[in-house]
Image (cartoon, rainbow, N blue to C red):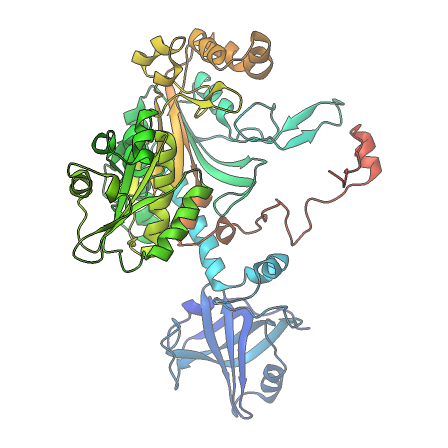
Length: 592
């Protein structure tokens, strides 16, 4: 095997230029074309591809060595840049090639289990098993490098704006954050455990108490929860906290970062200030607190029109305190056939609705299955309220209002994808004024929608004891194209108010002391008004590079059961390690 001795790389493959210039490049063999007296090797590195050329005038030892190369061999080549006879406009270096004078084979490679191609149909499980090979694909390398650019842009922006980067502990006290903690047993303190942080929430608040008025961290976070396309058990967030501010100050700083990162990474100008919706507006118009505002199809309330109609489904929902609402799929009658509407009906039943009513306007007159129950022009009033025209389809859900809104929000998204009406754009939306509490019907209790340190609006504090549902939080989310990017809030700094919030959530004094005692104690020594946010850098990267999954922007991701296929994590450990930790493994009950 050759060595690099005497050779030093001067150029990356796709950054090679300058006819007549002598260069040294290194990379992997992408493709070989051996035509007997001519050999062409496509050499690939993280920047792209350049063609290496060998012909009759090439030194015979170099030529013979080139003829032995195979896919994924690691090479270094020294030669002269020259104009390419058969040009390739598909690659950046398609007009030039390197006429090779010296060739080193630094590492041979077995035939890989799949070909290293951007457009691949290879099973993802196999690609994840050989992730180091999968990561050689340009599409994934571009994604990972884009993520790196986001991180650099974040640090540059926040440093320039007076923020201090401070690392917080990775092994912390287990506290409730909404998901299960990953636990780390202590060898020294038998029977006790650290937790991996779900976020640095309490530590960054303590940094504000300590006087570091502008904190930033690219923080690793861990949550033991079921996975999906936009969730991993370990992830990174741009974590920020500021003192002596209110909501407007934080939103302004975040908008400055959004403007900066999109310009730095994609050269896209994002107009600011960003649009805003209150939580109530977002739910009523889009059926979700993560609205995708790239397309219309907003939810329309027709309850007042149908409250006394003869259609029992509609009237019954209103009488029970619920509502009847609709979305209009414009020019969709040819796509949303009766058969397709039946499929949508099954879909909404699967997510909590009792059924789906509709008006489908194909001919001169609309088809409406419930028209026979309507009187006094009620059908016409509905059509007028919805702004429906010939060619449109109106879809109705009648139920408890929270069910109606959430179902129509999901249906809106599904229909938009089916109709292919979602434009390619960057639609940011702030969602503000979240409820502090949400009611958990399983436990019949009020729980914090964000976290228990969130500051309620001053005018709502009076309702803490009497009507928790009226308490609005100084909380905000930033949504991009229907995906939550950021969540944040102003924090409670008054120890008495914090105690009251804990009590409102049903925590006893013993629980408060055990879980949050050190934070409550810290506030007794003076805390400035402060607030902050956590923005998922992985989700931001996923959206910015148009990936379908967080796995496509994560170097070594986990799969749905939180295992890593390449290394085999998690794995068993030996009995000696378990004995040191005073841990005994109970055999799994296969019958259960």
